[in-house]
Image (tube, rainbow, N blue to C red; front, side):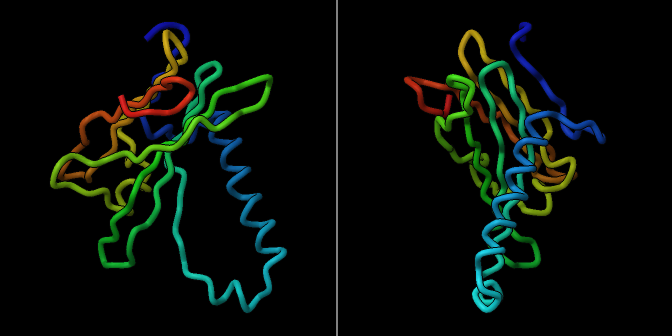
Length: 161
């Protein structure tokens, strides 16, 4: 992949990446601020929506974050996975969109699998020749990894490749 790309086999086994720290700080700060301004009774009545960043990486002026959302509360909860793309413009990270990471035909993402440290089999991101990202998610220990989901920037928007 050239000097402008980053390929990260997941999990990182304790290593921290700048993008993960930045997104994690934002993910912790926003809920904390909203909790401070929400009455206790409203917080108690709110549904339990589970969401977790499962991977993030930056290459030059391009950044991606992969977010899993719990879809149900069954014994084996399923999940949806979304990629959020950002580009740096004049020193600020600007969103270029979000896309679903669609599982292979007749398959589903499972919350406990994709949010596990081994839930991301492989992640790569590059900023040239065009900003792009690829992710391979796990179906579980016995089912192995999915096919590669690829994304790129086209006309300033994040699209499936």
